[in-house]
Length: 573
Image 1 (cartoon, rainbow, N blue to C red):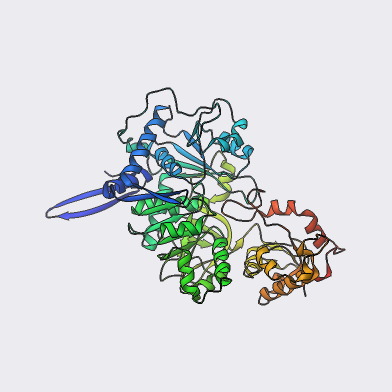
Image 2 (cartoon, rainbow, N blue to C red; image 1 turned 30 degrees about the vertical axis):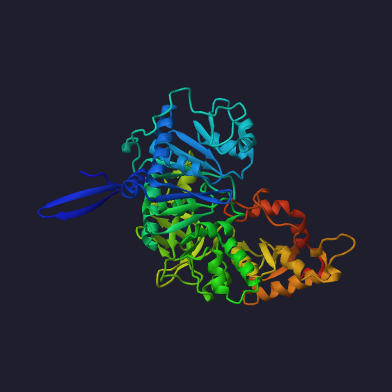
């Protein structure tokens, strides 16, 4: 009798029939891949501009050694182990070790404040914390209860505990933890949402959630052991964790960790990946860079930027502007867009080679069901849907009803089964005229302009939309005329000619948009939105509530009856 959720492969051999089962768990995938590809290159990481490799067997030895130490430290199956770290080799080893030990991994974003980090550690009931270095530890250690042990990946811990417990170290090659510690229905991770609206909630994902989604995603696009990925997105977010890390574990391919977001293009040359997962913002920046480089062959330049061997460019985490999608397609590079959320592990739909459609996010994954509610909300169900929210039964019951996950996103399915995303249900702007506008659509149209780096629109209850615009300052400066740089020191974005330039640019980008999608007033900001200020999530999604708080005066000026904004910042109705 085989457990449910096992993959059964029947191998005929004469009159005998053998059955091979592979449990839908990350440890089962990992052990199978190590047995299959032990001495092959598996995991690469870049330090000080040099690429280092580990084989599957070396990765397994490190992960099993740490798993044994975690168990020796008194961590039992089901106990929570938090990790506060940027992407690095130790992040992956810790994640695999926690899986092998049967514990629950709680990854936490390093960009959060010290108090936010401590709140998530305490809320999850974590019994052990891994942190990447002493500098990061000082950010949150003062907020932690004194009895929570902390282990550093690198530096000394300034008086906090740096080893697990005063017990003998695990043997160099420990026995593999009992596979029964991890079952498909067992809790594998608590992943706190990015919190674009409201307080973050702990999303509980099972081994089966993660493993089934990694397998379905990998199988859908034909991922195999020959693929080499370059990972730049934070592994503490479920997008990179499933689509880079766990598809790598399942397929037995190669994964290289980029040294940092700033070194991405250099790392593409070092790693020469065949597949990359990034967010739309980066595709936009690279397109702008190539457009202004003056090269004769933009198609060749695009491929060169990504290392020269790239076959698959995947996009997720936010909507990709159709103009950016078109720009790449016209140069022979198809961006494959997908859709999902933390609560669905995360992939619900994805584009694959030969089955991609402009403006869509692909077809629904096999095994996942999607339907569109009467109000346009996307509902999903399947083996990837979360167990619920950590210690929040009310929120769980509100989000999962009759087995369907209410995503909070508005969308539609066409006759060929392609899913399109219209925007967030809660972010839908209702104007005083009764007309409705989807802000992300308008923002995508605006940021298609080479002069506009970021844009966010507001207008709830108003007669028309208003926009906060972050210029591309480098490009703006290249367009500057002598009169723009005022002797008074006034920022260039306040110059009347600059405002007039952006008024024309906004009108052009929105020329085909509906009346309710037109922006009547705008303000040019003197700085970009940032993660450090809490205005963006780690995957570069805008936090509208925080932005509205930080730019209250600007928004009030644009939406007040007195219209205290420069006349040239008013756009034609």
